[in-house]
Length: 402
Image 1 (cartoon, one colour):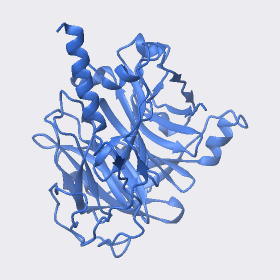
Image 2 (cartoon, helix red, strand yellow):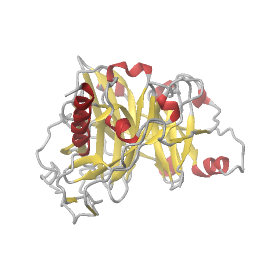
Image 3 (cartoon, one colour):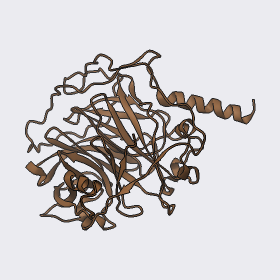
Image 4 (cartoon, one colour):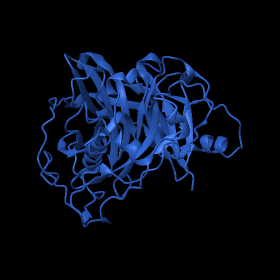
């Protein structure tokens, strides 16, 4: 065979691995449970628990440490995930990013937005190092009202928007986690807030921590003594479980590097709200870096940010099955950078590609990479994105095109 045939055979194998259908007839979808016991009896509970090392189980229906059981529900989706036929290079539609002007402390270079999530109608912007912005004896995260975002996007105001600083208390977190390298993601579920942390301790480790908040999100408090430890999936530096997905009253963490050349068996980790590990889930091969995720909807679908910047050289890929399948947009065809959103879905067989074409973002006209490190849905209108400071603090909106 010639080299071209070998290349397409390899691509077909990669694509099959990415989709990972359970069978040729149906895909059983995890549904949102109506109840999930938790050992947390009070939002102000501060008792110390043992650090829980990642101990995967073999079956998603296995009984978790809390004594609960995830009961498989009737399939909500039938048929294997569908994918569009390949498109010629340059024919893939790209989506423009509408930049939302910001002012105030959030524009300082040391802000480094690392994640964001909705608390009711308030968008919370998590900083990698909240203690850089002192606030009432603690650090800060920042908040923006949905009404202010909609006012700008609807042309009723011209901005800029000044985010509100929310006091953030994480007493002694740096002392309790050696090699602390900052917060990576945030999610709200019930009356609790959850975050992931990265640390370097003769290799990378990730931690899942939780806390509570005062009514109206006047402040956020972490319980630094309650945490679950997640071992890395590769030996690559500066990479960990950087995305946190809330799904009903469950939480899933997603590792940043899931490409075929760097991670032979990608997994997502599923936790209960008391931070007990429920199981590990097969995860599709996706090239480049996954930097954040939205919550899952009732059918288990969620979106992740997938990027490749010059700082991600260790994740460079010779072959990207998603680009081979769906083609490249005009700006991507002229650049090695990757800025896109990918839809995934929880099933009883693991996390799979949802079969939706990736949303490829129109790259910056100046050719400078944008480190999209945070994502949130804005109702059915589109997605909000934020950078971690490269090239600067940016908040953007990606409208969904009918």
